[in-house]
Image 1 (cartoon, rainbow, N blue to C red):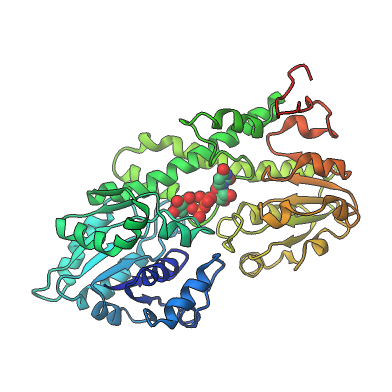
Image 2 (cartoon, protein in one colour):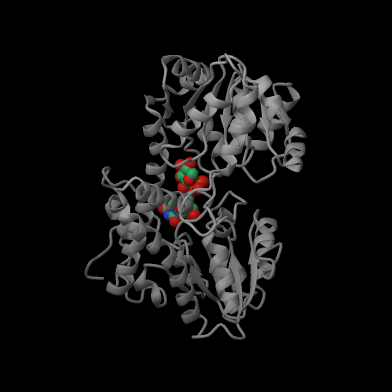
Length: 461
Ligand code: UDX
C-alpha cells in the first residue's frame, strides 16, 4: 500500500521505517528540513536502538522516501498516518493541537478519492470527530475521504520492537471499510504476532491512549507515595514493590520508585486529560490525576532534599556528579526529564554540577546550557562530594564502585532510581542513600535484616 507518515519525531520516524519494512511504499513528511535530510540518508535524528538499520535497509530498497511537502503526501498516499506532536499548551494544562490541525488543513485539499487519514497523535477525546468535519469541508468536491484513530502505545527505547510486536492494535473507525483498510496495513504484523485487534468508536480509541498513560502514571505515583511512607516508617520500597508485584492483579512492572516519571508523554498527557475532563464537565472523575501529578513532581524536590542532606546540609562549595540526563535509559529525550530538573535545582542552590549521559548530552545542553556536561563518568565524578544516579542506564549499573571510589572526593551516592546494587557499593566503601529505602541509611547491614540464603528476609534480623 502507499502510505504517508506525517510528523517524523520519535513516533513517526519509527512508524515510517516499520511500515516500509513490512512491505509498504512509504513517504515520510516533516516540516523540519534537517530531520528529513538525515532520515533520507538513513540517519535517525534521535537515539532509538535499532532504528538506523531499519531506515538504511528500507531507504536503500526504495520503499522509504522523505519529503517536506504535505501536497506531495496528499497526492501520494492511500493511507495517511498523522504522527505530529501534541505538546502542552503554554500557560495551560490542555494539549496544543496546532500541529495536528495544520496537517489536516494542508493535507485535506489534496486528498485522493477513497483516502484514509489515520490519527496516531495523542489527542483529547473529541478531536477526531472535529477533524472529520474539517476534512469534509476541505476535501476536493466529490472526494470521499475518511478519518480513523489508531493510537500508538510504543515506548521510547523499544520503539521498533513495540511497533512490530504490539500488545494490541486499537482502531477507532466510522465504517467497516476503514477497519478493513487498517487490517490490510497491519496484516504482516497481525499474522506474525496474533495481535488482539480492537475495533471501536473514535472516542474510545482516543481515550484508550490517554487512559493507558494515566493508569501507568498512577501506578508509578502510587509506588512513589509508598516510598515516602517507607522513608517515614522504616520500610523498603523495593522489597515492598516485589512483595505486592507478585500478585498478578498488581504486577511488578511500572512499580519502580525513584525520581518519578518524565518524558514527552506521561506528564503532559495526564494534564491534558484533566483539562479535557473539565471541558466535558467530569472534572471530579479525574481529580485523582492531579494528585498523581503532584506526587510525581514532589519526587524531584525530595531527591534534591536527600541530596542536600547527603552533601552535609548545603550544596555551597560542593561538587556534584550527575549520572543521567535523559528521562529514561536508552533514550536521548530530555523533555521533562526528572534527572535534568534535579541537576538544575542542585546547581541553583550553589553546587558545581557535572552531568554525564551516554546519549542525551546534546539535547540536555540545548535545554539547560548552564550545566557542565562531560563525556565520561570518570570526568563527572572527579573530586565529587556526591554522585547522583538519576537515569538507570545499564552503563551506570555496570560501573565498578571501587574504581569510582578512588576518583571522587567523598564516596557518597544517591540512587534516585533504586537500580544500583546497594550492597556492592557499600562494600566498596560508599555511603549510599536511596529514595524509599529508609533502612538503607546506614552502612551495610545497619538496621537491615541480613538476607538469608534463598532470598528470605529474617524478621528477627
Ligand atoms: C510512555 C508509555 O509507556 C507508552 O505506552 C506511550 O506510548 C508513551 O508514553 P515513554 O514515554 O517512552 O512511554 O516512557 P515509559 O517507559 O513509559 O517511562 C515513562 C517515565 O516513567 C520515565 O521517566 C521512566 O523513568 C518512569 N518510570 C517508569 C518510573 O519512574 N518507574 C517505573 O516503574 C516505570
